[in-house]
Image (tube, rainbow, N blue to C red; front, side, top):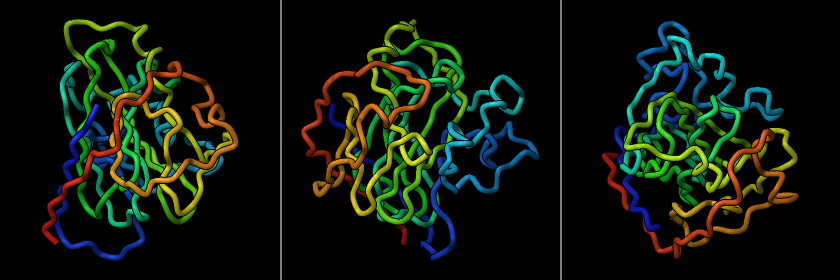
Length: 251
C-alpha cells in the first residue's frame, strides 16, 4: 500500500530544549485533551524512561475507563485520518509507527509504519493513516511511537483513547497485524544512532520517506516487541519504497 505524506509546519522553529509529541488525536494527560482537566503532563514531549517503567503510554494506562480517559475521537473502520505531531527538535527525523490496542494497552498492533524522515520538520507535521476495514469496533487505544535518528537512544510514545465504529470487524483480525516495534526501554532491543529504523515487520501499510534508510540494529527481531506480546507476524510489506514526502512550511 502506498501512502501519501502531508506535512504542515506553522511558526518559526526555535532552538529550545524540547522534543516531539502527538497532539491529534489528543493523548492521555495532554493539554490538548478536553478530558484531562488539571491532571496535565507538561512533559509530554519527553521519551519513555529507558528502564521501561512507564511503557506503554508514559504510565497513563490507569486513566483508561475513567473520566480523564474518555474517548477523544470516533474513527470509522476503513476510513483514512491524520495524526499530527508537534514539537521543536526532530533529532534528524527517524521512524514512526501508529498502533492500536483493543485490550487496554496490554498488547499493540501496528497499523501504519513510516520509515525515515519522521518527523520531517519542527512544529506541526501530519501523516495519513487508515483504520483497517476489518478492525474490531468499540473502545480502543491509539498510539504514536517514534525512534529518533540521532542523539540518545530513546522511544517516544503517546496514547489516545478513541472509539472505532463501523459495520463490524473481527477480533481475530488483530492477530494478522504485526506487533508494534519496541526498543530502548530495557527490553533487550536497542536502535543504532545515525540510522533510521527499518522496522523488521512494518506491515502492509508502510511508507518509506528516506532512500538512505539503513537496517535496524537489534539483538534479534523477536526482542523488539512489547513484552506481553500481541499480534502475529503480519503480512509481507507491499510498499516499493517510492513514496515521497511533500511539505509546505510557513517558516
